[in-house]
Image (cartoon, rainbow, N blue to C red):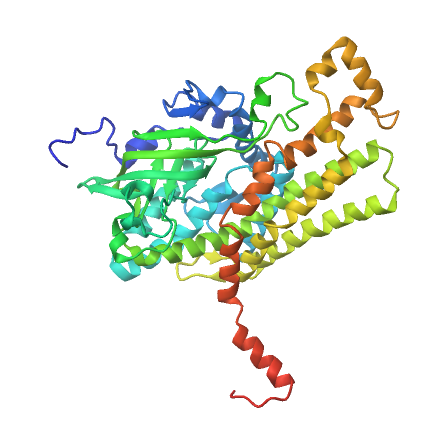
Length: 503
């Protein structure tokens, strides 16, 4: 280390970092693990003293808490036997030993979507530990490094502690016409700034980080293919969420301040929400034991490709949200007394058809998984990309149909405060009623839920994230082009047409 650079107060060993994190068994344990961490998080221009208790942040924490609750309530679905530590572990921390594991993962993701109606923020961590199994193994095979054993030791402890991992992959990118090493600001992509005998220091920003503050560890990863000139940007490492040098800036969401108003009707889904944060790493230390790539630039593209194969299939989670949307649309139809109208029933059928089409391609990619040299299984790449490409389109049509069935009152409805006002409330209860046997408040709650998921806070997780998460639509089209095997398809067509061709 340069003598002019003061030593950080917490250049901790891997064990020191683990010692700060408790063993988590229940949702209550998880909530307790987030408090008193001393993190720096900005929200609306203010440093938040205790983010775990902030009303805007709390719904996103609840969504993650549900993953702990599900493991207790339905262990067959949400846990798995780990050969690494010889005990049951949360399925979100389980390595993929078979196509069946991937199928169960997809079923768990759909169930989590049904429970929360939002992004529950754990898929990126699961897909990160999945891709690192094969990539670290293959780096070691080529370079004689020790990354794979480091990874396994980390994963064992992660399973014992039952912790959460966020994926820090997306860099700001700056001038898109330039490579990482060519940027005017070298921190536009995360890079290694210096190395010591104990570890490395990294600097840069990771954007759009799903559930970034809510999790115990952040795994930083390259965001694109790299060249030899970008070697300092070829870095993968695990960093605790409370490490020195990290600053979080909370992402704004539509209608998020409704959580500050009191009441719960206008929030639409008051219990659960998603979270995205901008995270600045200012010379953050990573001990050698938690470094899984440092300079092996030729593996960056393959890491991204494999991550997206896992993660694009993980978007079957949106079918759980789609189930909620179909249920909400069917409910408002019933509350309006229109459930027997044929064209309305047909719209509900269309919503279901689109939702199940997403699920079918995602789960097919899991059934067709292939074994990697390290022993782990990976989703079929073509079908995973088809799944995600469906997700970039179908939730928007499902949402359009839900809004069609809801009617304009969804966005012109008075507030909960007006409903609570003695004079205004009487008018609202009388004239915003549908069927006589359905309370006006129930009708308003369903309308607010549809608004929440199609225009409000959880439209982030259902719509915009469906468009841009795990790569925007063109990224899937590129992968589909690469895997479409058009020459083989032409050969079959020409053969059947009677055209002579080479075998």
